[in-house]
Each structure stands twice: as structure tokens, then as C-alpha cells.
Length: 488
Image (cartoon, rainbow, N blue to C red; front, side, top):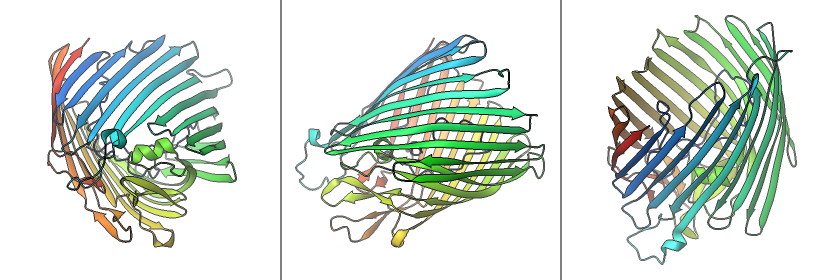
């Protein structure tokens, strides 16, 4: 299965409503990971336990007080692991997340804290040859301790100002000695006049300290982001900019968005320019490719996105979105094998990249019973000196469907297709190779036998193809798991 795209640095303190989210996000692919466990929002408390092929145990626990007018608190914990057909093709994922939200008369205070731990092995070598590898030498792990606080108004203030103060922090480290901490405080102030004029200003900062071997690097960037939005019955426009002083330069990031209701909300053309900062650091890079070498480059990068398109709906059930985006990206991360270590990858930051993205979405929803979404993206990359976009796909298509039969039987299915990717061929790294595209399908069923008791079954990669998402790293073929769910 294919997990979510890599996290893009979108500062947590940017809180104003956006017409739509349109950033370019490089693919986040974890070559041997199984389906991520997601808490069931329809049940406050449950315990889930199962087992599957590839010796894959799954345990998850969700406890929640439920939302009230005074507080909301909960904890979620999960363990998932497994072994593949190849030597050292193993993985393990552990997660604990807690949250507490206290409601006051006119505002609310939220605290979140968590831990995640991931274990991977560098199994990407020719297993038909004799290689002097040990389990301990191939093991890699990543651990993350994180926390966040938020304080904001929930009701209008005496002068109709809205405010939101938030701070996020994490400490991230791996088994081979690399570590980094990240701190992002921010404050948003906004005011609406006559229901059609809205102004806001956001100030914030982003600090990132990276340490590995003899390298110690502190990157910092500040943000001042004034915005103005005008909303009319049939159209709206939002304009502003983000001035971001960094260590050695000042970024100017334009932000303009406009839409017009051509035929009510059924046909809505839109266009805009969006500038933002992408953070290439230890956490984001290893989230995309966990098989990285030591001492990878750490850098902020600027993205300017020019986009336009059409969105809308047909009747009460269908929705659609068509978008064309031309994105200018500096320091776009690409990935290549290390010629000195066949199991590891190096990151190359492309100074000036142009990414053409054609994006389409179609959705169908029938109350809570049936939900179908189809997303398609096509990418064309133009890099400096004609360099290929190593490790980045040419297209991605995702089809998802969920069917609820009277809350008794819940069926979910997904199909993911990815186009070809390029890589540098080992051992001499002078020729390009191509990884062909692939299709991955998954099917899951939950059967609620009683109010407090149920069972689940999950089929992963039903096409049973051990495709490669990274050179020398085949994924699992067919996978199956099943288990029980206790609700309380």
C-alpha cells in the first residue's frame, strides 16, 4: 500500500481560511510499510488486535472522553510490524498521541503530545550474491517526540477580533547519531468588517537545529504575513504576502487567490499565486525515503505556485476539480543510490526546478452510506542542466471507495497507480534506469457483530506484484491480516 505524501512545511500559525489547498508535494513512499491504522471516529473507545501474513501483528487502542462543552481529551496508541520474503526486509511502527482541550467562556486551550518510533532495515542489495552484512549493521530507526499548544477565541471578542496563538515542537533522532529539534511559534490576529471585509496578520518563526557527526546547523526563518480578503455573493478575492527573513536572505512570497461563481456553486473558475517555504530537513527527507545515507543536505526552499482551474458540483452528490499549476521550486529534493554503499541513498537538491502539474478530482457522496473519490496527477519536471527528476513519479492516480451498510458492515477499497521513475544505475552511476509504473489495490471489511464487538479483514496489494518503489527495494507482494475489535 502507499502511505501519504511527504509532509510539506506549511507553518502551523497560518490559520486564515483558504479557497483550496494547491501545493506541490513530492511523493512519500515507504517501500515496505503496510496500511496505516486510523482511529475510528464513530467510536470513542476501542481496542483492536490482529495478525497477518509477513508475521505482521497489529494492535491499536483509542480512548476518548468525547466532546463536551467543558473538555475533550484522548489517547491513541498503535503498534504494527512485519517481515518480508527477503533477508532483513522488516519494519516496525509504534505511535502514541494524546490531546487535551479545555473550553472556557470565550476561548479554548489545547495541548497535544506524542511519540512515534519507526524501525527499517537496509535490505536493498542483491540477495543472490554473498554480502558481508549483519542485522545490526543494516538496522535503522527513527524516533520522534512532539508537543503542541494552542490558545484561541471560540466566540467573538468585544471588538470582533479573532486571535490564535500556537507553538509546535519536536525532537527527532535516528539510530546512527543524527538528531534535530524544531520549534515553530506563531500568532494570528484577524478582524471581519460588515461580513465581507476580512483582514489578518500572522507573525511567526521557524527554528531547526540539525546535528550529525561533526555537522551542527541551526536554520531559522521568520514570517510576517498580512492578508486582506473581500467576499461577495458570487466572487471573492484574497491578497497578501509573506515576508520571511532567513539566515542569509529575505524571501518575498506572494499570496493571491480569486474565484467567481459562474453558475452558482456548480461552476466556479479560480486562479491564484501561492508562495510558501518547503523545509528539507532530517525528518521530512527520511519520511520520503528512510534508506538515506548519513549527513544529508539541510535547507529551506522557496516554492512559487501559479495555478488556475475549475471546480464545482453536479446535483447533490457529484463534485469535481480541474487544476493546472506551474510551480517554481528551488532546492527540490531528488534521490539517487550511493555508489559506495549499495543499500543507501543520497539526496540531491536541485537549485532551480520547474514542475508542471495537471490535477483532477471527481467525487461522489451519498449521505454516510457511499463515498467515492478519484484523484489524478500528471507531473512534468524541468531541472537545471537538463537533470532528470530522480525518484519522482510522472503520474499518480488514486481511487477510493467506502460503503456503509447500516453501520453493520463497512467496506473500503482503494486502487493506487504510479507512473515510472528514473534512477542512476549501479555500480558506475553513469547510466539512467527506469522503474516501471505499478498498480496497488487494497480491500478491507469491518463487521460489527454486536454493539461492542466486531471483526475486521484486510487485503493489501491484491494484484500480488512485488513492485519496486525505490531501486533495489521491492515491496511486499500480497498481504492479508485479520482480527477482532472490542468497543467500549
